[in-house]
Length: 285
Image (cartoon, rainbow, N blue to C red; front, side, top):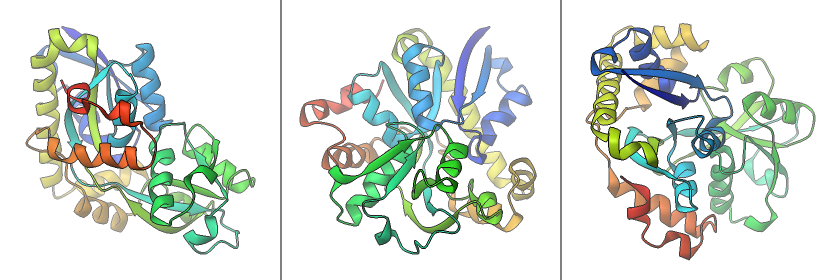
């Protein structure tokens, strides 16, 4: 039996993983996965891959791409969710801020450097024609740190997946004033490089099984109710999210999308021209 440590965000995107593990649908492949919820998001998972506390991570495309091109010893093996991620742009509930333009020169809460909350702030800032060098950040660890920062005037803006934060907007812990959509598939599966040569066939079988689980879940007429119950979301919210979301049912690499990711990271000055060189050989196994 092969054992791997895997991490992902504790959000509805990863329910197919949870179901496959809980229902022991991977055991016949000779695999035992130890899942860890990564409340700190992509930045926390990158740290886990660096230190070896994680073998596999299900994380944001832009964050892992940047880290690999800057030397992280990991490879992207497949796309996990092929649709974009919708990031809500949040402000303090009682703030006078009503539009994204009012966030220029304000401080943004981010979970970690290199996280999606960090990188997508750059993406939106570029769309707004702000000076990227003037962006200010407060590293807060996770979504709860972000909410605390907004409530305590330690940040005026905070980007996080809009359905995950919906209960907090209902509780008046923050307001969502707009959104920014990733222009590429949002989640990929990355593996520490040292594990790949010996385990790639097995791991691809595992990932294929999880994608099959995702397809079955997407086709389940009760899927919205299951997500609503497990993640404390309203039924109309979960149905909207399901309508917008498709996992990578065919387990394809979808390499054609990564050039856009790399070009955008360079355009935003988040990677150098030197780091971009030979990006394809660095990124995939």
